[in-house]
Length: 238
Image (cartoon, rainbow, N blue to C red; front, side, top):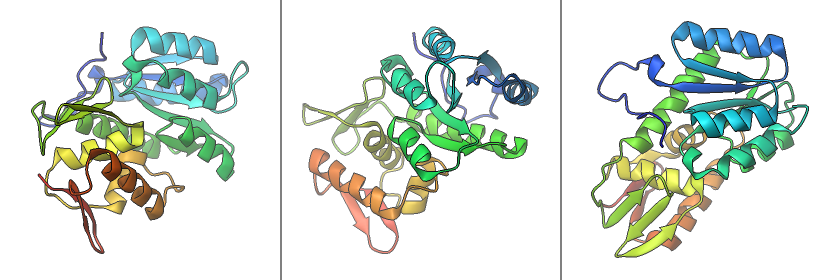
């Protein structure tokens, strides 16, 4: 069973179609976030412990998960690792929430599979904008055409790419970058666009990080498939 279809590209977004899970051991923070999401019409699930949250995620397959970094039974980094081990949650967006602002906490969360890191207290309007942005990124992945483009066939459930009958397994970020380029062949995506679509608004992602991911992608799918447009960014040569 997969989560409900992410796609809202051709019609106004209906929040009731989307499941959002909040994992937070602070009742006040959890209640405020839950109320803000419920007021927008999202289907909200809440958990006060990591294990309860992981169980709910595996059972409900939410579109988005927001987890506190500091939990009583497991930290948010561990939650990210656990959730990413479930292939049914490959497309689920995950963000870590915390009062902690140090870089190493943010880096650890992102390396563990989080898509974003939000520092508390989070402004309600900003938080809801983050929710919509994460759903748009998921929509981009889900809206990819099923037929081959530039000799590529993408299996979004398995994070698998097939080219010339050769299966290529990609790490999550490389897969999302390739998926973004495939979504609009020949469109030039700036590094800033790639950062926003794949990493969200994390301040820890630099242009060099994107360049390294592109280099690794080229090694796996073909040097000529992804073209560099100097001073601008990258595009797929369809």
